[in-house]
Image 1: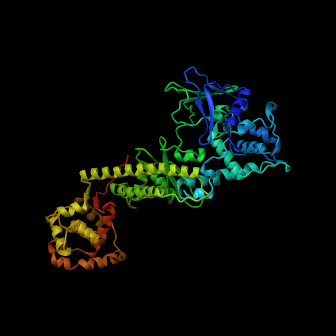
Image 2: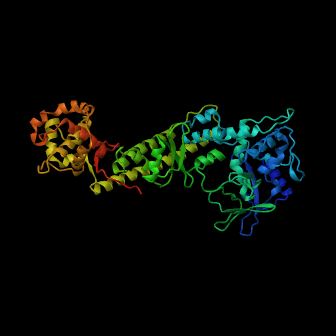
Image 3: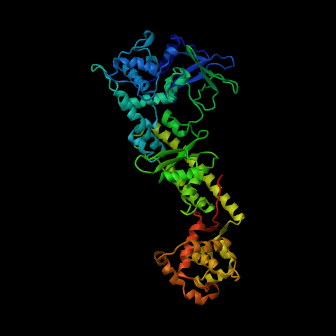
Length: 569
């Protein structure tokens, strides 16, 4: 079926003939590109009458149940079906009847089987939701959260629902009735994109998810800022577009408002369309696996990390956790705290600046990989429709904006955290420490021929020099003024030496490095390296690196950070 302007006009006339009141200010139009819409035939005022749609033309689950009862298989009950399953099947069958299925339906008030045909004829045939994309189109976004959501909706909701509802009915073999999964997905989208909450018209609605179809009013497009009111006073469902905040001039579109909490993914999956920019409060989900429920519990109870969604595994002790990453000026605090938790040492009972910076590095890697994914050029095939390709390009642009915004916000947070920590002397740059410690500088010049930080980095010597510096700070007696004392390192070295147990395997790991420098350094520069340096000291120094050091990915600069609790709100 192809929707036409005549079909829209016929539907409006059908509603009027069955008791609806449609003021002349409302003009309904059809366009092949944008579908149905409503515009003002003349300027709206505060006295403009509302749309009043008679309940007789409304399609509900109750109407569907009455219409389908004669086809219920023997001994089957409809009570166990999910909300809206009957309505979806009924819409499909009404459409099939127009195509010649020849089914008869029993309606109240003597309605004929073809009563709803004027409305069914204006329902869009082609809905561009990913739920109806072909395999080639799905492949263009394979691996994205959108496709994961799509697959989950199909596998966990629509397919089981489709099988359940069909199992309840038996249609005459002489009728042309074949309901496919694609038919049912189409009906599912009709309900999700055009449905209104059934609680509006009945306190007896069996579920908060139960919906009904409201002809004529569902011609209006969605606008999150539209000021509208829905009411039901028997026998009319009333739609009012308020003009208190702004007027509606002649020729301007009149919008409905389905609510503000629709994300880009929601709009595309349920409605098959997208705005050109992120919607207000738009977000995407970051999905991660937590190895055990105990870890999840510790995150919540000890570190006060709030998850936006948690799914427990049915096969092991793990959990899937989800965080919302918003597109505008919202620092994802709980997401940052979670990554800080993942990067804390096993014996640490708190989140620290070091674990937070390490966590930010990991989080930025994920964000950057997502951004690169959405920046990839589309490799479409002939099987991909141009309309879908256009939607996917739009979707990728919106996702790029969301992830770039998050990257910018997180990077700024990282810069501020570094600046504050340096200012408070709870963090020191290794590069600065070398510059300040002239005694250590001179020893590097004698051993390596340079004390220039960048040259040492180019020669891949920083890790060796880092261990030498840490042991030097830890082993130098307090009464020997050998360069600048780094209290962060000295205190951590002494404390770590008391806490850890060094075994044979630990010593083997550092034997080659120790033998490279000792005893030769002790003989050459005894004032620096002559305080009884041992192989065990290097094992301790390596643990100090784990506890206090962070290397900035952008330039590989190493920082020493005091090991103490840090609060992220």
